[in-house]
Length: 199
Image: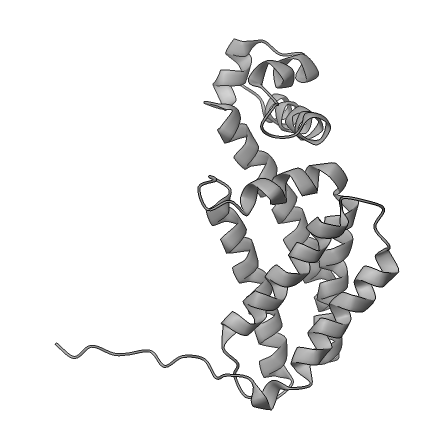
């Protein structure tokens, strides 16, 4: 029977391996060596490299969602909440370094098992932005607008991660994009109408 500590050690080791080697080249054997566990022990917890990859992604994204939620809760002003959330999200992405880049590069592929998890994480961020907009008293906006904004900022982080990232520049650009959208809420499309089928 396994222990939570052993599982946590395997996940932590997988994080280190994926960050150092990349997801494609990394193997279960690399994780075994890093964690100092046997193949039999690994398979008590995970069926494959993909399953431990999913556990790593869920942990990283869970940390991100908690960081964004914490920063937003500590801000009273609805517009300030959006800026605080974006800042927390950027900090988490940038602090994640090579591991975050490897995970996000994998998760953007529609055929990746991480893709649905990424979609769910984006849903959480979009809902947080939408909630702050509604709290500020603005008319509802098509959530696809906020989804495009989130994906665009995420793309900037991945683009800039190929070299030295100028955090202050990235933060200024991300906030400029966010506030360009927020200052034009009245002109943005409304949420689509839901068709109700009468049977």
